[in-house]
Length: 469
RNA sequence: GGUGCGGUGGCUGAGCGGUUAAAGGCGCUCGACUUGAAAUCGAGUGACUCCGAAAGGGGUCCGUGGGUUCGAAUCCCACCCGCACCGCCA
Image 1 (cartoon, rainbow, N blue to C red):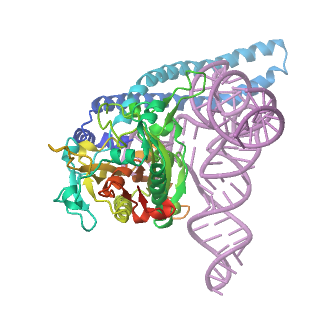
Image 2: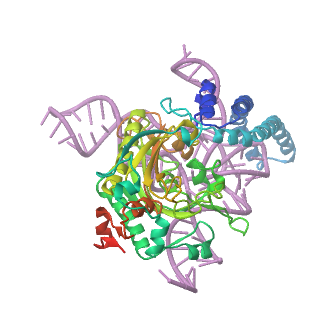
Image 3: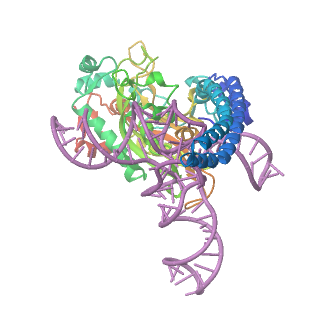
C-alpha cells in the first residue's frame, strides 16, 4: 500500500508512477473521496468531543440520581425521574447525528479502500521506462568457460541439443501423461532421477542460503487466509492467479487460498508486529510448494516443465529498516547469492533490469535472472531450436509498500528505541524454483549420447551419482 | 466433533457499566548513588489518526463485527483465534 499522506502531498508522483507501470488507478476519485471522508470524520469528531464532554459531566449526576431513586418516597421519585429524562435527552440527539455521519462514511469506505489498495508503488527513477518485457535491459551475463555466446549449442558442444522433454522421456524422469490424467493440463509427475534431481537442487539451494549466507530456515503455510494475500500485495490484483478454497460455501468460517510463492508465508510472519530495531535485518529462507493458476497464459508454454500449476521453490526474504541505501544493498546481495549458486552449477545466465511496464504493483525495482535454455527460442529449418533465455528468478525491491499493508513496523533509535514507529522495508528473491530450473540443468548438461552429467555441486545431494543414463 | 476456560499496552497481567488509556510487574529512557558496572532509589514511557509552523488540542482503539444503554474493556449476539480435557484419526 502506498502512503496516503504522500499521495495527498504529491499526487502527480503517483499518477506518473502508475502510468509508467501501465496501471490506471482512479487517483482523482480517491482524492475526492479522501477529502469527503475527512470532512465527514472531523464533523463527527467534533460531535463526539461534545458528547464525551457532556457525558463526563452528566454521567456521575445520573449515577447519583439513580442511587437516590431507591432511597426516597414516591413523590420525590417522580421528580428525580423527570430530571434524569431531561439529562438524557441532549446526548440522545447528538447520537442520531453521529450515526447518520457514520452511515455516510461507511458508504464511501469500500470504494476508497479498493482504489487505495490498487495504487501501485511508483517505480524508482533509475528504472528504465518501458511497456513490456521487450523493453527490459540486460545488465550482465555470465557463462562458464568454454561457452561462447556467439555460437549455437551445436557449435559449442559439437552435437544437436535434445530438449528437456525428450531427455526426461528418455530417462523416465517425468511422466507427463499420468500427471495430466490425475491433475489436468500443466501437470506432471517427476519420477526416478527426475525426482532425485529436483530434491537435490532444492536442498542444495536451501542449505547454501542457511549455511553460507546466514538466512534463517523456516517452513511456511501454503494454504492461507485472504488477509495474507492482501497484506503481501498479491490481492486484489492477482486474485485470478491464486487457487481459491471455497470454505464459506460449504459452511466453513472463511475461505483460503493456495500461495504462489513462499514470500506470502515469510512476509506474513511478522504481520501486525512492532519489531525491535536490534532484531533487523531479518533474513528468512523457505522451501515451499507453489500453486499458480496461470490464468491468461492459455496456450503459452504448454509443453514441458516451464509453465506449470504446481512447483517447489526456495525463496529468500529480507526485512530491514526503512533505509533506501540498505535496501539497495540487500537487493544486490540477494542477487549475488543467486549468481553464486548459478555459477556453482555452471549455468549460463543473465541479469535483466525490468522496465517499469514489467514491474507489477508492489515493486519499486525488479531484476529478473534468466538461465539459458537450449530448447527455447525459434526453430530453424532443420527443426533445431535456437536456444533462448528463460526466467528462473526474480528479485524485488519494495520499500515499505508491503510492510505498510502488513502493518509491520519497527522502533528506530537502537535498543528498545524511542523513535516513532516506522514501516520496515522488504525484499524478496527466488533462490531456486524447480522443476523449472531443471530445464537448463538437464539441457546444458546433456551429452551427445543423451546421457546427462550431474553438476558437481549436486553430486553430494544425489548420493554420489554422477550421471543419468 | 464435544465440553470448559480465555483473547487487554513492546511483553506480562489486573480491571468486569460512569472518576479507566487502563493498576502492578518486566523491558526501555533520563536522573541520583558509584572510580566504573551491578544492585538500589526517583521521574518518565501505548498505537493509530485529524487539526496545527510549533506548543498543544480533538477523535478512535481492550480479538473482529453487530446490538443493549444517556454512557461499554466491562452486559448480549455472531464470527475468528488460542489453551485444557474427552472423542476420532494419523
